[in-house]
Length: 373
Ligand code: 8OZ
Image (tube, rainbow, N blue to C red):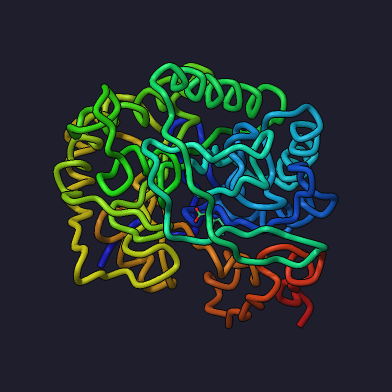
């Protein structure tokens, strides 16, 4: 079986990567006041041997916030803190893009401007939890009832993406941005029938439901100035955050054909249930057909796949036509994951109790393999 090596350099768009292993975005809730904390540069730099680091999901505006202590990209002190992270990663030879996030209805009034309702395509509450950190202790709480965005608010949301993307590359020093179009957050809410009951130009038909995601993608490309620095993350069938679409195959066929000509650096697919089973018997999806649609429509960037990969599954995926493999949880507890995969070294197990919130424990204290041993 011949396939490209996981461990050799490769370039997609403007992203020149040392290998095909990507650190997936991972929410860590260590950014009080939405400002990346003092350990963030260490955390990302420890993992800089990944071909590409994708940051934890990062709010494009205050309204976009849905969890306690997640970072933002909308205030000068947030951008300055991110600059410290990107400078440190670059000094270590790494590449890093920031994931642009608007949670939509997956939020809580405690986190919203003036304690208002979270915003959504339609006023339908997500049956899911968010994380509020109270007195330093993370608690999972029900999301608040959202209000439907009015049509005249939508240009402002596109503008928030544009502003955040521009600041990400021009001020914070990122190599690019990833649009978070997955996991039941705002753009995925607009896409899918379970959350979008609108009757205007942003609801109803597939074309209408995909409109916001495509407008955001074009605005972000324009803001960054180069589609080769932009990627997008999608999760066609994940049930995460109570999201569902009645008929994902034609929806994603349309989306892939619309994204194909835009020149994106990559499309990042979560296969199956985010952080869960790759195969969902009640939600089948043909990822190969989605990739073929994107390629046919001119997509030349990387096809990045994610969810539960091991080295052998990753090599199988490369043989089957994937270009980049994103690893999530293994990167939390294995800062030197690339080396461990290359050397077939054992992986350390992560401590789930320190995934969300806290300090150095479970964040920057996982050791790399001892090179002298
Ligand atoms: C885990 C906890 C909080 C947020 C996602 C941004 O699923 C997230 C997330 C994951 O994309």
